[in-house]
Image (cartoon, rainbow, N blue to C red; front, side):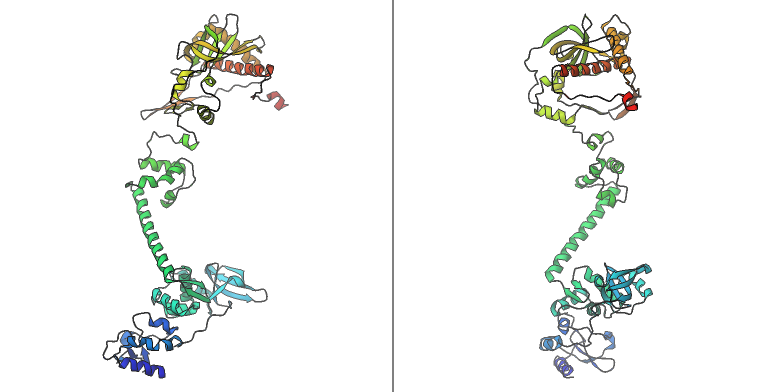
Amino acid sequence: TLVWMMVAAAAAAGGGGGGGGGDLLMGRRGSPAFMMPSSPLLAPRLNTRISVTHRRADLPFAAPSRARRATSHFSAIFRNLRLKADASPPAQAVKDSLVVYKNEPAIVDDVNEELAKVTLTFLGSKARKAKLKDVAMIYEGPVRSWEVEELNSASPQPVNSVEDVHELVLETGSKSISELAQLLFDKVDHVTSWATWKIVCEDLYFHGEPSDISAHTKEHVDGKLEKMKMEKAAKKEWEAFLKRIETRKLKKGDVERLKDVEDLALMSTNSSKILKGLEVSQTCEVAHQLLLDLGIWTEDFNPWPQRFGVNLNTPQVTSHPKFEDVERRDLTHLKAYAIDSEGIKDPDDALSLDADGKVWVHIADVASIVSADSELDRFARARGSSCYLPQETVNMLPETAIQTIALGNEKTSCAFSVGFRVDEDGQVEDVEICKSLVSVTRVSYDDACDYIQDESTDLGKLDVIAQIFADRRRKNGAITFQFPEADVKVSDGKISVEPVEYYESKDMVMEFMLMAGEAVGKFAIDNQIPFLFSSQVSLLLLLS
């Protein structure tokens, strides 16, 4: 009574008013009711929740007031005053109460205090047991099984401003979940308690456990709101970016943002945030097609070398490569035939036959211009071989080096030559190896086929030797496969696929390359040279 008399006196001292914040009103039953000021600053001092509210139109003015100016006089009184006391929820869950377990709402069906366990029912009527310490009660209840399904719908909006309630809790101290629900929604039940807990879990204005919820500092709220604002703007821009991709209307700067699509198309990753946002399959084929549709890749771009990690760059040399100054055996009196496909500009092997029947296999002498462990050597070792692509050939070495070592580009070519004889049983013998000078004539596989038919020519005699060696290999269990091949070319945007014709002369060249390998192996063994050998177990041994 004393408090209301003091409030009434303060209100009467204010003179006329229009029922604004801070006015003294008459309740429906004649009891005095103090209208809270529009500023939330008084409400925090009450440290309470008002459980009975009336519509403004239903409350006649008892007297105009300037109670807002009198607020400070009664703040100490109102800090300790509770218009209605609320008991905090019990420390642990009880039967039929609403609890939170792993961020999910559930009803307590049974409590086994002896085992410290509870039986819970979740949304969709699924049930499970849990440890009592792992659940936190947010509403004492009782809550029935059908009522928990109400929590699956959209959460109600707070009746009172979350910002004002935050300011109140910040000034007056922590609250229980039921106290906070009353402040936010003007009532406490299972729906508002769960909605309140969801607000707490947002970690924007409040934090803590259901029994002890505190307000974040203003700095925390302001910082998080700014972050949320930035995230919202970023999300809006991201959606606009995806829309531009869908409509194929990119703007400046969008191409750089498509790197994760390009990475997927090149198989350097297995996912793409952009393709996920577009809700399409995250495969290299889909990524490739999108880059084509957007005009970022052209139809003649070949992604396969990069997909397999092939370096397509060729090192640049500042000076023209030259052969080392070493003594070379002059074999220019022999006719050396570089047999290869039509149009090949850099043949790297050739065949000769001495008058006494000795075979010579000449190999381009790369080691004489590429020193061990030099930049060119390391680059060539890393690549392993030239890369023959439909649209181009990427060589192991710079073009200037290739033209220098290719056999037949000059009247006299430097070579690494392997000489040997083949006996009537196909055995390789009388091996000698030297650095040489040779005079090379280029012959296509097609033309060579005509020459090998005539056994009076050098190529005809070489073919006879090749057949003897091949017979020996077949007797030892060698198997030869003849698979169809295709030559795929892309030129000026046009694709051509041509079958590769089979030539007997190609088999002949292959046999002499095998002979040269065997000859070098024998030479290494006879001269005790450490060597890496390529061999295979006999098929007869494997089958035995």
